[in-house]
Image 1 (spheres, rainbow, N blue to C red):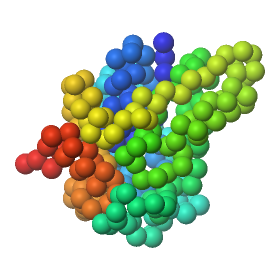
Image 2 (image 1 turned 90 degrees about the vertical axis):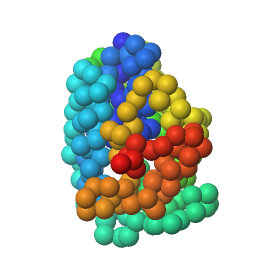
Image 3 (image 1 turned 30 degrees about the vertical axis):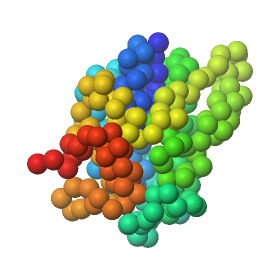
Length: 223
């Protein structure tokens, strides 16, 4: 079976892709360079794709800076030191990002005659983004079936979200069990000029919480 996996370069998408590979899917990886300020994750995605031995890795440039609306695609400052348990949707939310990404992955999947998509969304240890929830994924599956030739002709698409009910610590433990090298990944929203993580943005805080609760050191912070 062939699956299209959205590969961002972060530890969640790495783990989700590795789980799909363990389930014997043949992986085609899609990485979106959307003008994000932390574009270093694209290079991380390349390293991850090599490590996973994907069949094909496509990097697609869709510059969402033309719209703005997020501190990741504009000059607005990325929040630092924010309470990661705070309510509300932070400024790092990119409008409709997963809708856009899944639409692109769906288009590629249909050309490949693939009916499986993989995305590393998580509804527990995350920043409150609405497009990471099970309700959104279920709705998009319905859209995929209604809005494609394959769906109209009777095929059914499935969006695999193996991490959606896991904590960040559980994700890290599972990936470690699979032998993943999280030193290949990049999570920071606002990296330093040398590329090292800032340690204070939401993504860094969630990553640190995960490694702490998993009882493991983060390989990016070692040495």
